[in-house]
Image 1 (cartoon, rainbow, N blue to C red):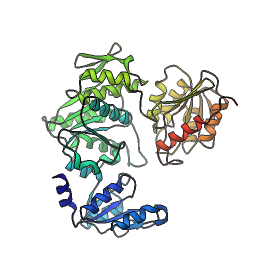
Image 2: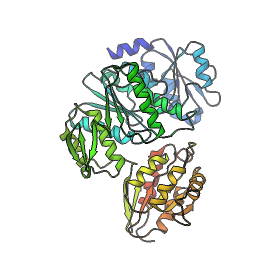
Image 3: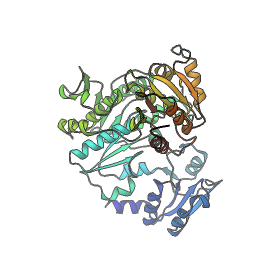
Image 4: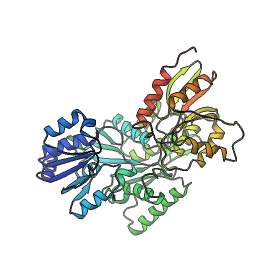
Length: 466
């Protein structure tokens, strides 16, 4: 039935897909199989696409490539790539001509028969998504993991049933234009991010709201009960407004609040003891919060015994304070996922009072680095900087009241290869070296995963003796 519904929706329709990345290629194949008349648009040239060009043309796909790839869109339905703003002139023009602009995730939400658990937030969403997925799997549920992590979900749609669960990590880019919300929605936290994409903080916050904006009365919202920043205040103000306008939509569970909370070094769920904080293998206060969010999201679905088992067994997610290697008594950790100041602040706190050698810098998302300065002064003995944000982070450190001359020591390098080399040459037995860039990766890498793998390769190549 799902396949039939999908085919009926797109058969003989003129469909334009913007972006020929990994996630969109299965979508293009599905559309051609449904009998759609597909045009695929991409900035890449024919030469850059390589064999993909021949594969798509063999499917009957028309390709619009290179400069001007968005000129003259003639479609009834347009799939935008998440990184393209909804108000891009080409999309506005297409809509004015009668086209419906949608996304792979929007169509998936419209057709998916399974229970969808969606997770968003400025920090912690990948670990929380992973925890929820693992809890459900340990509980014997069939789980599909997707969104920003895992595989594209739409191509797996036809095998899903009402008994299944889809655990989906959602970015503000994806949520910005969504008109459907998950059955269980989780907001880990909010802090300024992606201001190179969003016009301002208000737009960023409102994009995140879409994760619960279209929920139904039986749906559940999991929210961080702590209210420390103006962004969190805005969220709680919006929740109060929602309750006043529609009391039926008030099924909220608060972690760091009345649903799941920490007391005397232990986690409780509605008064019932779950586990000691020390039972959690992955380090850091932020991971205690990630577990609390996962417990709140799976309450009534997963037993607390399953939560305890996962906490004892799960060693963490790649690129998130991931232990790499000890060389000459120096421990190296990869936390390439830390693409904002708040993520780096959480990573620093995970090591307690230990003074670290921290590698930072990368693509500039137009973020404020001043709040990071004091935590760096408190937790770092040496700060090694490279990339587009290096000067901004240095300026924040030097301008901080917490900074004292050479405390921490600031070192500027040309790239991460030079940063690792400096850390290796200037570290002592017992030191810890942490890659926590506080910046995106796009100035030198395709994504944070590539950056993290590069760092690990550099560390694994370090000799035991100079």
